[in-house]
Length: 194
Image (cartoon, rainbow, N blue to C red):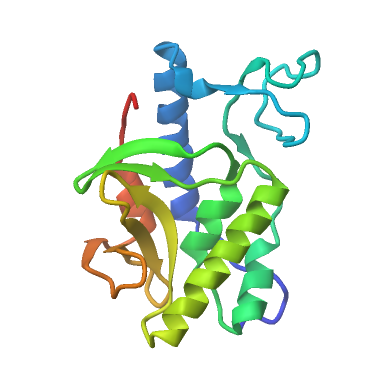
C-alpha cells in the first residue's frame, strides 16, 4: 500500500477526461441545453455555479464542470480498505467538480458520476467503500463504479487490479469487459443531448 498518504494519478486518463469534458460542455453550451441549468442552492455550494453571487435559493443558475485543485479522498479510501486504489479511478473522481455527465458508448446510454462539492465527495466515498466491502464479502475482484447505464441500471466499473472497464450489475460478478482502460473508454464516448 502507498505509504505517503497520496494516491497516484493517471496522466492519460486526465487527458481523456479533459477532452471529453470540453466536448461535453461545448456541445451543451452551443445547443443551449437544459443540462447546463440547475437550481441555485446556497446549502449545496459548488464552484460549478456560474455567476451565483446575486442568486436566491431556487433561482435558475448556469453551471459548468470545474477542475479540482487537490483531493485526498482516495488516500483515505485506500487506507480504509488497506489496499492501493488504481490510479485511473482516483484520477476520474479527483479531476472535476461537476453534475453527472450524460454520454453514449457501444453499450448504450450512461451517466458519468461526478461530485458536486466536497460533501458530495464524502457521500461518494461512503458508497464506494460500501461497494468495495460488498465485493470483499462476496469474494469478488475489487472494482469501483464510475458510471450508471440506462435503462438497465447497470454500472460501469474499474477493475482495481488492472484498470479494465467492466459492465456490472449490483451484487453480481462482472458481466463483460468493455475497454482495456478508462482512458480508452472515455476517448470513445459520444456526447448526447439527454
